[in-house]
Image (cartoon, rainbow, N blue to C red; front, side):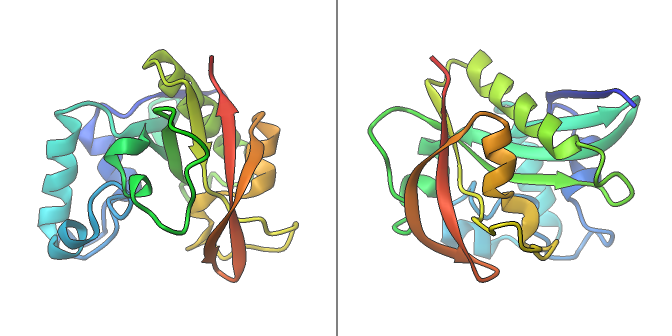
Length: 189
């Protein structure tokens, strides 16, 4: 198996990774951190997919992992200034650099345990670096090796990001699935 990670430029592939089985269902579409809370909550059903499509016209909203022609993973990565992390009171700013945020890593069922999340983090780092980001941050759980519920596992684990070269930059006041979230950071300069 050879995994290729590239910019998320095909809406159909993003929809495969983020869209609902029923078009009118209210699923995240990875908009929760990308949009201000009020705007995110106001979007329902098919409007969520249309919003992602509109955002994609401004540029790729992240990266996708492919096994041949099949899309098998997704990672959301974008400049922090254009995300909810810019104003999140629970996750601190380490400094004033115009860092990028990496907040969601998803692997399709049937493809987990194959190293795809590691490839996605690597691909997201390369995507941010190529766009000129001075550093990239992630906000995973520090689960100490304990099992993380799959529905909350999208933030990744501290260990996943350590393996990609990130270092813990700060504690946060955020907790997910009973585990504290930490701010992990990688300098790209």
